[in-house]
Amino acid sequence: MHSKSEEKMKRNTTSRILSLLLALTMVLSMLAFVGCSDKQTTEPEKTAEQTTAENKTAEQNDEQKITINVKVTHADGSTKDFSIVTTADNLMDALDGEKLISQENGMIMSVDGEAADYNANGSWWCITKSGTMLMTGAADTEIADGESYELTYTIG
Image (cartoon, rainbow, N blue to C red):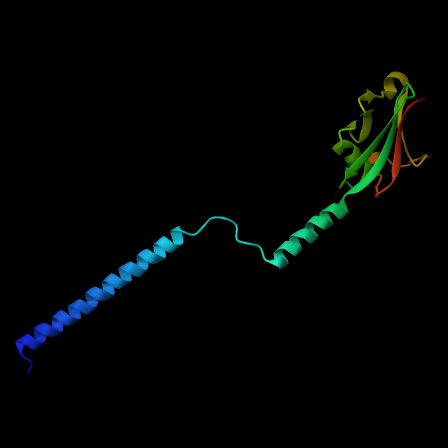
């Protein structure tokens, strides 16, 4: 049998060990909490692969942009040239995106601020591509980089 003093000593040792473990656990928990709250909210540094991928995406977006040239001939015979950089795939969207036209139900009503009214005086906007009259409307005319179009105020 153990003496009372030996048992008391064992209990004190066990109690001290448990107290140390508890204190250690509390300190580690506080460090973990402080470590989490000290983390910076800034964006992590990008790897070379991420930067390269982002640059390729930007280049692809630039490659999708095309430039078309548009010459507008007004009723008084004056002309104005426009260079349009766009991602649109048809003429109507490219012109509308530049606010060069107003349109109603797919019909061009005005160009560069000048309206044509077929019902009032037989005027309309004739669309040509490099001098050749189009047989499609602006919404159905697909565009490609470097093409030239003309919008001419026409009566009759």
